[in-house]
Image 1 (cartoon, rainbow, N blue to C red):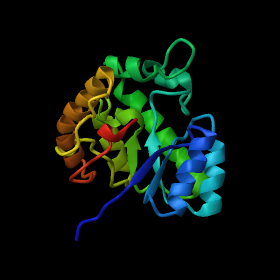
Image 2: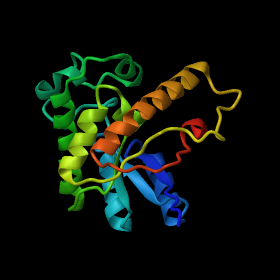
Image 3: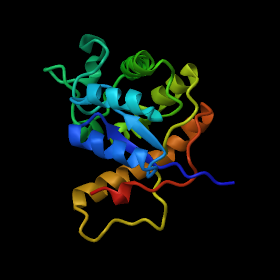
Length: 206
């Protein structure tokens, strides 16, 4: 028996996006909703999730907004204003410290427990940060330690290819994510964190 899991990312990112994701969930178009712990409309998403008993996972964020852990404790992850570096800068960097990643991931998992009363059954990465070469070991080890058994491995299915109008910068990012995901598989396996054997999602963006 094969299982299809359809995940809607970025719950909490924006008011209209929250409502659109909720509509998809209530109409059974998606299986799981992945919530951001520290975005502008996260509180709105939490209220919707509790009211409608939405099946949630955690969307681990290292690229937008401020960390949930004390900024001085995760200094390698933030700029001089105490904000995460942003997607291009994050993926272009390599100086992120193992302990900083663990500290912030624990903080976001703890936030999820405080809001919803239980651990998330799965955690994936916003903008696929969890497969970054400086992140994947800390990420998988933390999930294993916390008893979280599932994540995402964004290796695109061969039949899914970028549309001919996909911008070159996005294609480059997708190729980077794919190559780093291939290298992450052994790390996730080592820590017994499972993932779907097939993935579609990178080339449907936009």
